[in-house]
Picture 1: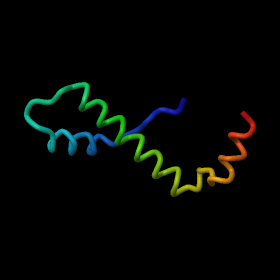
Picture 2: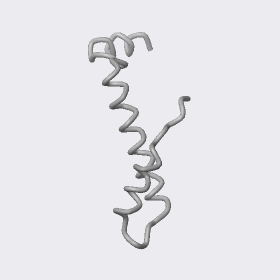
Picture 3: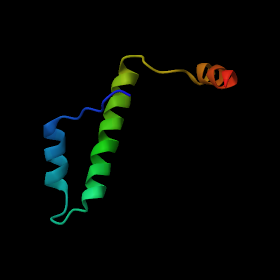
Picture 4: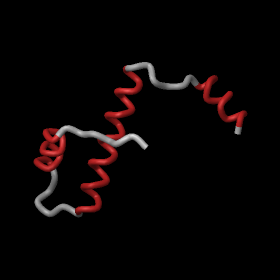
Length: 62
């Protein structure tokens, strides 16, 4: 599995916008979701995705 990467500045921004009392599990989840969204947007920008037709063909192979 490929590691998720997020810039330290992004985490700092999220922390600055968080309430004074943070539920740690929720904050970690927010970091993970943000990193996954950034990764998906990078993959989309680089053409690393399947069309719905290609996905249908892959599912048929299961």
